[in-house]
Length: 130
Image (cartoon, rainbow, N blue to C red; front, side, top):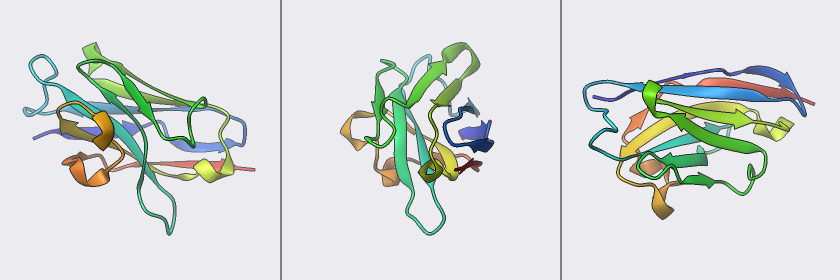
C-alpha cells in the first residue's frame, strides 16, 4: 500500500508563488529498489484532471505540461520521500485542486495519462485571484 499526502495549497494573488509537497509512505513504497513515476495533476471545477508535472525517481528527469513550463518546477527529496511542486508566476487559470499520484516504473511518455496511476493523494486546493 502506498499512501500519498499533499500539503501546501492555499490562496494567492496572481503573480505569486506556492510550493506544494507530496509525502509518500507505506509498505509498498520504496525507492531504494524500485523506480516510481511521481506526478502532479490538477482538476479545475467542471474540468477533467490534467497532468501538470512528473518526475522519475530513478533518473530525476522532469516532465512538464506546456501550460506550466518555465513557471513550475518539480523536484524531490529522496531522504524524505517527498516530491515538491514549486509554482511561480501563478495565474487565475492555475486555480484547481492539485493531486499527487504515483505509479511504479519510469514516467516516459505515459506520464500525463491519469489512467496509468494507481496511487493518489486526497488533493490540496490552490486558488489564484486576479
